[in-house]
Image (cartoon, rainbow, N blue to C red):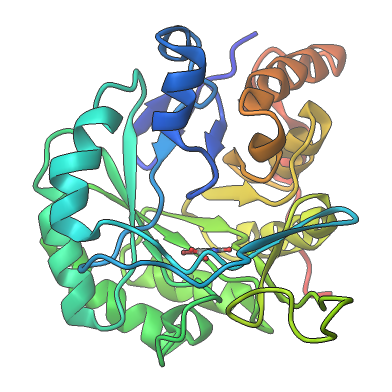
Length: 309
Ligand code: RRO
């Protein structure tokens, strides 16, 4: 079964990527050794989002499991640009797949610094612009407004020819309008969805569960919300769309591809089973075969256009 796809100039062996921040390569290397590299679960690896300066992240608790997923409020803990380049990049560069580094700034200047620093590294194939993190009090959330998204792309697009993938927030009325702004600004692809704003209440204190007061919902609970948003966005732009949201099986992945996603990313499922994406890819191949299709481009569902309703 030919599962290969091409996204933003990247030739990928299959369409299953990871969602940013959902797979700890260092921990997986410790658990699985070099076997991890021999059958790496993803066809490209997206790093945890980094910021210009180091961040400690949010106070605990940071995660709660829900009936059909989880709510995270991690708060972007990371080593900052310099720490990432010197300490994390060498490990990620050993992976047998293209590397996409996810970046987030609170101003154009911060985004420019990140894109300059990251894109200059030959180990990096693509960059994800995280404009959608709902957990950090940054003042402006760029991805909530089309003009802000367009002006961010105008600021960073001239810096690099490497693929720029804009990670969209689902917490807007019209994600297609943000996707169109990203495309107009020169983005090579969009990915969605990031997490949905969510709250859990601690039954002992009757206050918020999370140290930061709220978080973002992911997992099967958001799958059909994500499918609808992907369907709308894929019908509105010509650039590739990466479908993310509660993928637990090959059938879930196939649903995104049928909704005209060019690729998918597995996130929450990897927390329970770090090799979930290996199984999901195998199931996807079997599902395509069962449907009598020889490759992903044969999928009739990819012709489905979204409607305005
Ligand atoms: O670090 C986080 O809390 C976080 C990020 Br940057 C993001 O993009 N999405 C999310 O659910 N959590």
